[in-house]
Length: 302
Image 1 (tube, rainbow, N blue to C red):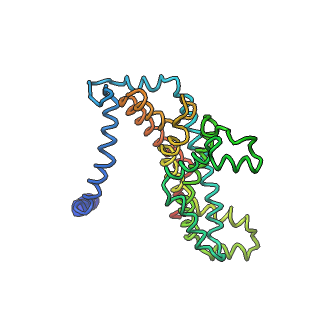
Image 2 (image 1 turned 120 degrees about the vertical axis):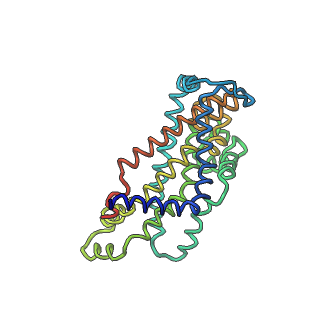
Image 3 (image 1 turned 30 degrees about the vertical axis):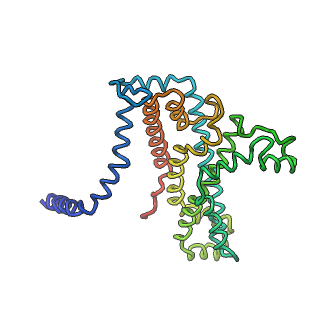
């Protein structure tokens, strides 16, 4: 009976909260649930180039996508893209956050400078780099030639799949650093100084303190930064579109750029919807595995 009364009380409390939660729930339904449902629905339809629904396609769209000869290369590119950007971003951000957590003259200015790539438009930043590396015309080309890294100023950094994809990874890391650094920096702020001081009194070195005391307590912050970076990088289009969008074929494509090529080059909105569903499944599984194996909240309440 006590359990029944508790359940009724919980139900009544939930009903009382609904008027306050309704705006958030409506917003969530409008910008997340409805588009996602429409995407899944469109993936099972035959849709013309002009968007006319011609009827059910069953799972034919998924069959077309999964049988695409370019898919294995695109999936490999996607893995390289996500893993490279996220790992490099986390490692560099850990170093930056550790540095910015220390007291030194001008620290506020340095912290402010770290935000600049976040404040600037991603498309603008990527476009500047793209034109800086234009053969014969780009200032970046001239600089690399002047310091002896290239033999001429007409190397096609953005005209070949591997160099363009590599530059896209570096740009993605650059624009991802501010958010990740500040997330980890917030984790630093939650670490008690008394614990660190006690370790120093016991004779622990700086390296030992960082890896045995600080880094374990940053686990939750790193998990948040990694999860959001996986989502952002996996779905990133502007950087790749600017730097690799003009390269023929699919040698520099990820699953996100491929689905836009389905729409732009082939007029297949239905195939693009099917690939979007596959993308969503891959991302959810990837994040699920990451959270399962890292267990970021383990020990937090201990």
